[in-house]
Image 1 (cartoon, helix red, strand yellow):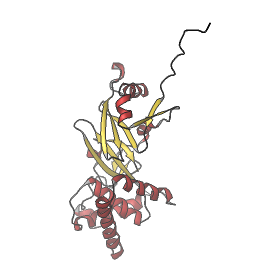
Image 2: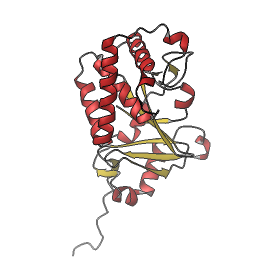
Image 3: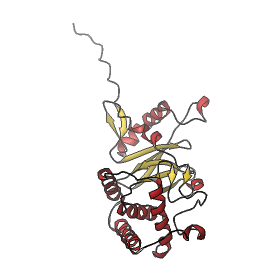
Image 4: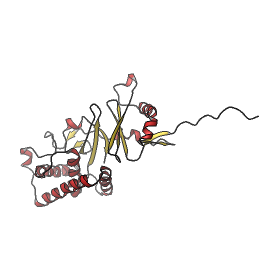
Length: 248
């Protein structure tokens, strides 16, 4: 006689981030950046009382994902996989900025303090590259989705032979950009200024990281350019308020 017992249900597949979705944990919230939709979402991350002051553990993140499994799948922020891809923890490897490339002149890349500005020589080629980079950044943001822009920056950087470049070269070229920046008729906006600086430095064969960060309470998103833990176009105090979620 056949057994009436039912076969045990297979364990549910693990959840991994969907393509072009990025994730980080900050201030008790798990933040998702869906680059294809240019949209942010959040779920609460409950940590054990004994570890309340520590970064969220893998177990705490897994519990939150399982609690919100249906909603996350429906929003296409995650997908079911048979093996652990490990990408949910990738944000922990992103480097937080610790210092500014012009320390102690620690400010945004919109002009330069007079003593530093007097030391920066600007030539015709610098002006031309600055204008071309600024125009390209403006046109990209007007005509292309952020997903395509990020993809283009990532592919160009991946194909570069010499990588990011040394800090001294980045300091010289960023100083030129900063000195010229007030002459381009556009107010400061982190997305534009980060991209314009990336475009300018790429014309000089320099490819630092374009970093996107978030804060949870209140919610805010920001981006900046950095090499290693060195900021090129933001103050360490302000950038330190954000947790990196994506590095390009």
